[in-house]
Length: 477
Image (tube, rainbow, N blue to C red):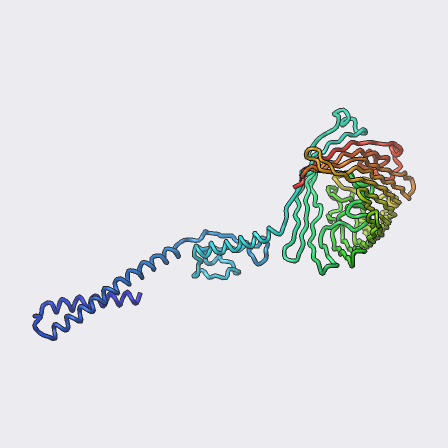
């Protein structure tokens, strides 16, 4: 603005001087010299006026850019945390500006600056999401049960069984894995943990993770699992911390502490893993569990591999009525062999729950539950599993392979007024692209989820064999 004032004053001076000299005769040498000076000043003035026009145009453009109003509330994810933390910029209200916004209101960013900021944040977001892989599954299930008259009259039922979403990946040095499931009657978390590799030998999982007990990851081959699953000793997930230690190619160790099951609400029956649940006079819950597992990996020349191991589990049983803690433990010896296309699994488990029940409540049985149903199971027993499977390749339309298997479980309760429980699953699985299908024939005697009244109970139906045909078709993405 000072340059504009100077040019304006010079213009007034030249105009006034020029008018005064125009009234004088040009014969005086001093007048001619003065006129020449005025003409030089006029040329300089023309230059200043041209420069003034350029300055005014630049000023107009800057004012227009600064006059562009920012949105009343612009939300941008904060790249510093990589989370849902939000920076709010209010261009119209200085009093509402958050403390963590660095720019003052007198330095409102231009549109170009905002675009650049958004672009950089989108790049950070792309880098974050590209490290996480999202997937899921949709599964349909057909079931025919010989112990359900209504189901038999309808010749079975075919319905949506599951919808699930899972996320796995790494952000920086931290691993992430989570899975949520929606069944017909309930929804449940399957697992959710963060992990960190301290080095090539030791990895930690913090959160809801698979309990390291017995044959891993599954002591079975079919969709229906083995009988150990319904006792809570197969594919069980609890909340705590787990360490996986692989000192070399010959050994794998697991050390874990779980504060409680995946849900701290012990009255919740809608869960994936089988745990002690509370209801009625049965008010026992699991707490403070330690796990130790060791496995030796053997290479048998000319045959294949053999993994042999030992698993230990110890924890407490809290009774909300007596406010006292009992004990529980389980020990397992297991072997998992792969010889060519064949897989053989052998496992023996001894377990015991010793609750501190009120007077009048039978200590011989505890209440477990999952899939929205509670049931009674023997508090002590021995469990034996013998499983065999054979993998095969195929080229039949979209079918590329699968396996056929037989999984057998025998449960011998060691409490009064009890009876043995048996489950056998014979079936085949097929793979066709992203579709995975199981065809299982389940037979059970005194077995929960196979027509029995529980596990190990000496009920009126304890000696009867029940059967179920189960076909599960899942699309995994």
